[in-house]
Figure (cartoon, rainbow, N blue to C red):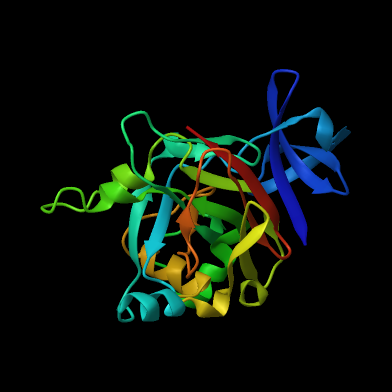
Length: 256
């Protein structure tokens, strides 16, 4: 298992592997045989960034058995997904901000994120495994009241894409078996979500395969697997933390 991280240090953006609080700096392309430089940096001496410069972030809806049962939904025939704008990205430690144009509830959603490592177009489920680079923690933040505000059109993109609403990190973890992963979301020191990847209708390899038939996925792209029961709203000053075993913890504060 390896943890890949992106950071800023002395005005320069870099990446490397993180172990026991130290970054082994690499050069080249994170997804294509990166080379260690020999430089080591303490984690507390850098500013961490989102772990991949994702060209796009796709996110699934209704991919949880428990959530579907609670909401009276049925299992979908194919992944139901939307796009979060790349201007919404926020890394670990950043502050989630309520948009000035919105007065309603802002909701957290803890999820597993898939990070693509190879260009991926119309691949089979078996083939999709080699196109998955690793996994990251996701907080798919939502301005929930906007979704159904206009009865003629569900505003998924707007509700999900405000600045700071695409929260992911702190690392991309490689070498994991996704079937063994568990997602926990902690709000102000109280556990609000705790579910296994086995709760998902579509597993990561299935998701990547099926979406790749719709569009090409590129290295660094992120696919959010969807959330389960326990989502809720955040009040100003709240601290929300999404933790996945083997990946780490994504911790952020919410403010107006």
